[in-house]
Image (cartoon, rainbow, N blue to C red; front, side, top):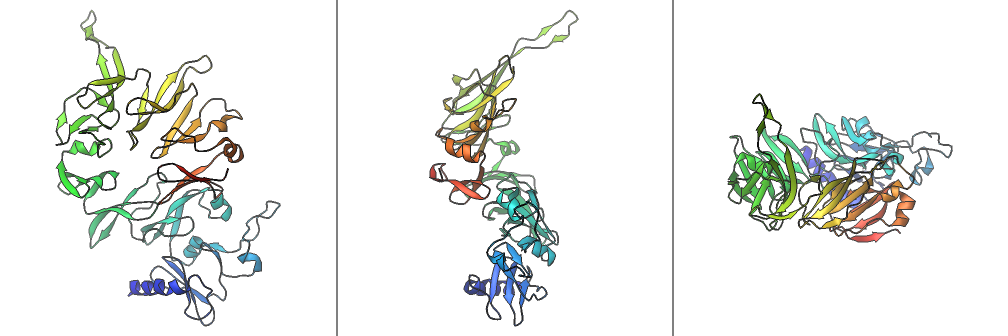
Length: 445
């Protein structure tokens, strides 16, 4: 019955949500768990289970996530200011929708990483994470800082990890545990299963563990039993290759281990993989017959599917992660100079060893914020005024995303994802729009 009431509220709201609430029965939906209903003498709020709040004589909605139940300030509908020109806080005019829901006991609490104060200023300046968690009766939902509920209030764990996407969770249905993997952008369940999700690679490709401790690989709807070590695969499926890599070695397509002393550093991409080879000198012993520590020679190189050397990469120090869909990974080398004898320079190479983002003698760090989109940050010490000029994003073609004029004006931009395009923002304003292949669609400068 409660679900039917909520359905009717949503149905009616299609006719009235974009209009003023003028006559009794008019409804405006704020999110999937909060609506405003016009009564004969005022307004009431409808909660997640169809419960009603006390009646309010007036309700003013600044936007979809700030609501005033006093409407004492006529300017509220036009301007919503938390600080006056002197910097002192003015009386609060309205509440964030999540604070209102908490006050009305429609939810018990909410949580966002960073600042958890949902002031307009903190949200605009991006001090509050875009995604967070709401809870009611120990049931959690994935929410956004504008008050939007991306999922139902049904999950056992809160959505507290600010970096993971997709995110795993679970709930109980008819006393059965249901494991899920949720797309953080849409709130959609990418995987819904009664088994445990042992590892996720990409849509349609993941490993499940059942109650018998058996592992199964799911690949585009097909299910195949696999050995336990298979859950450690480095990326999946292989791209134009017939060998899998995991943390300790190699598998063929039938799940059989391939004997080798080579240590895979990436997955195979178009028949090639980066590996580490460790060669120890012959064991020697001292006068007392005790073993002398062996010297090791470590070599990073590219091999083919026969594990034959294609190219030696003698200067590489580390390999960070697997080949992405463009066949690229972040690597590093070490430079020595008198000022700093331990400069670590990170750069990007492809599966042939070609430099996509070239190396330099600058101490830097590279983070892949999205597939084929790299953030480069200067790590030199001590910081200089020009340091932020070395901060930039590059795509898989090695193209600089933020031009010099934008960098000088904005300095630092945040990266945000959506379903069909991505954005660079600052203080809530969008400055650059990218398509899903990291090409610039639009830029303010």
